[in-house]
Image (cartoon, rainbow, N blue to C red; front, side):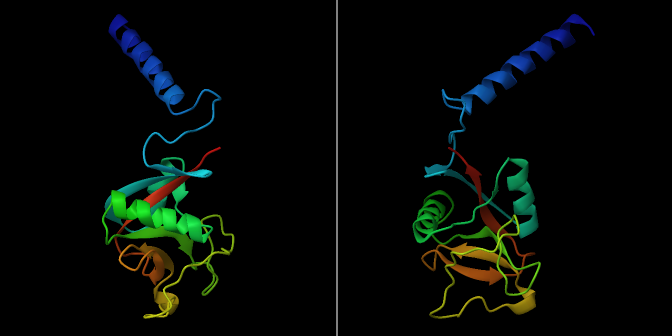
Amino acid sequence: MNALQFLLCVVCVVQCSEEQSDSKGKSGKRVCLKGTKIPGKCFLADGLKKSFHRANDDCIAKGGTLSTPVSPEENQQLYRYVQDSIDPDARVWLGVNDIMKEGEWSDQMGTEIRFKNWESEVTHQPDGGRRENCVILSSSANGKWFDEDCRGERASVCQFNIV
């Protein structure tokens, strides 16, 4: 290894250490540097439209998962964040699907979800049967959920658990 390679290696290690320490608070816990913070979670929007599986893989690569609201309050906070950060009429993938068993909606860990916010007044969601196994949150429908074909391309929001 020559002197230049050694110097570049040292600079990289120092820079990586600084970046890691910047993403943690004084107590060593993760904090939101980008996106928005809600109790116990950080949301980070990605306006680039992609399939459900690609969006999911991208969130995992960042150390998170696709957003999965667990309460009406959390859904409302996500809805407002999507409107403010992506588009007032955006439709974003949620980390909810019924890929494993039709009609049994679960999160990315395979756990059946308890909170659901289906649009039920106009289109009576979920209505896609075996064709539509992934879920989106629609800003234009006030944060209501719709089932859609997983191959469609939508924006997404990753969530990261924080303390």
